[in-house]
Length: 188
Image (tube, rainbow, N blue to C red; front, side):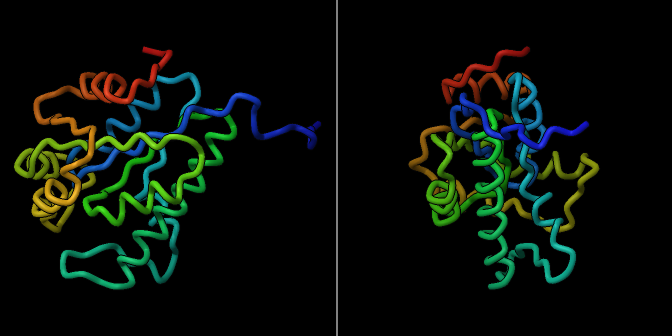
């Protein structure tokens, strides 16, 4: 028998969310999944997956610029924040991963997420390492996004948490994220 009177939210919401950002190939999805696994209750929100929910009319960003693609960048960010807020209220730490290289995009996340502190962490292995990773992974990109590294370094230079994960293992990167954010995972 299904109970319909069960509360989804808990008396102990999660302590905010983590937003892992960087250029394609920086390790966001891999690190986000490993970071979430360090907590007893956590969720990985892969923003590319939210974009893939659009069955028709979806537009991915392009280096040439595309007004509709740019609008959808903010749509998926808004949806990531709504989903993250729901997870927080239910006691799950959300770990969001997205390509965020512009100040306006990061500021949008900070405004749209209302579920507590948003710990923005920039994974920055450098353009060459990101390109190397892109060439060896199953989710291979056909567009060279490495120029976004310079844009990110200029526009987000004043951000506090930058992790150069070019030579770090996934576990070492997760340890660095936990140390930089002050969050404490309770699973190893």
